[in-house]
Length: 231
Image (tube, rainbow, N blue to C red; front, side, top):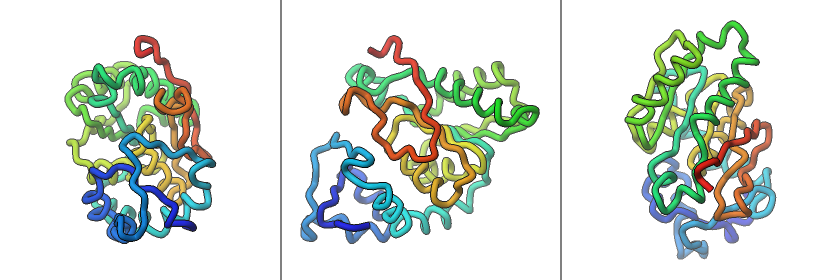
């Protein structure tokens, strides 16, 4: 990736996690190296703050090797689904980040059903979330009643590193929320598993460009979301 001296470190609270999970990035996390630290909440827009070539180069250089190696401990599922709820739905943030996640997931699954045909109900599914209880008590029963999946839907325990690897461990579809953490899963999938279809919302956050999706969505399917009740 060119121009590291002009790059930005975003989430300072995740320095330790990033350096542990992606050891090669340790060299980038240093004020002494001239890296400018932006305030929390700074958003980078694909095609404006970085190019597709720079993103791919960064993933290849710093991220892919540890993810591929560590993900081998998890069984691959046909579909992985990420749910972001707790901080996005609190009173302060829901207007800026919220949308009907259940409807969005349903829209993605309808698209998958159209592709899979008779095989749809045989798909294996994994869910990760910051709200495991809601997923197990609300989402999973809804999905089974609506789509009659034959296999159990696995909801993993919350763990920032394991969940990243568990989402990556798919072989057909990844349903991604409006979360930068999950965009990175999609970026790595695009380079290492181009056969995996990634779905992403057409909404990111009202804090940036009136909600425009600013991730690098090459080859992803951008799906409309319903923000009724969140506006």
